[in-house]
Length: 286
Image (cartoon, rainbow, N blue to C red; front, side, top):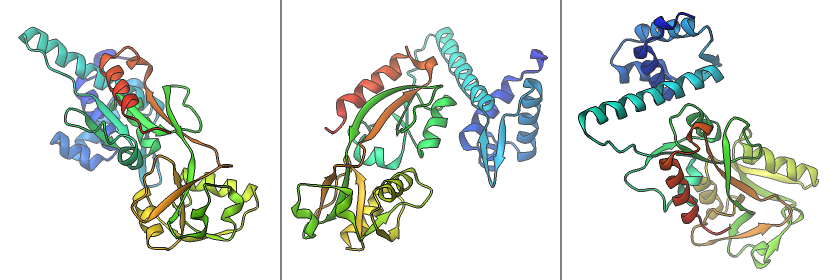
């Protein structure tokens, strides 16, 4: 490898591309043409001798090498910024960056959201990628399998609950089992979502007949349809139902664990540590 050809400009451009995974938006941010950005990234990949991204259908995904390059580029930019500030006698404060999904922000991290923290809204895969590439200091997500390349800290585990109108017959019971859902019409996420997949497996294993009332994306829409009487919804216990709905724990469904994840290179980072401590102190009780 000819390290003399490793362009810091190409690294900086790749970091922007890694944030968007879209050549059009990245080129706009960089104020260059798409062909120019393609050339920068192609030459960077040729210099490193590794593919930095792959195409999956209509979407782009970073390779593990691409994630490492993006993280290196961001770390390099942060070190240069700190060096220049030191030379100039200034002391810039790095803003902590948190990545999480809609549900975590709405029902788990509300007391943490404030000016001074940069937020990235992403699904589970996007949250892990943001941490791996250095975009985020910390990510919060539900994990059934812990990633081997990241450090994970269990924040809390919440039971799975059934949400229903307060006048529904099952609302009179303090707790429920899967058998109580027999014959129910459920408001569920799309088929490819991890929550939908896990719920379907549990119902199938218990041989519980059920039907789909409607498919909806995100806890707020699931709750909205439940409040309209379209069907019942199974949601994580940290989700707060609106007035008119009640939730009851489903005893034979496993608890849902929320983890905070960070890259090993951030283990001793005081900004990450302070953000994690703030989250732990603000969590709603299980």
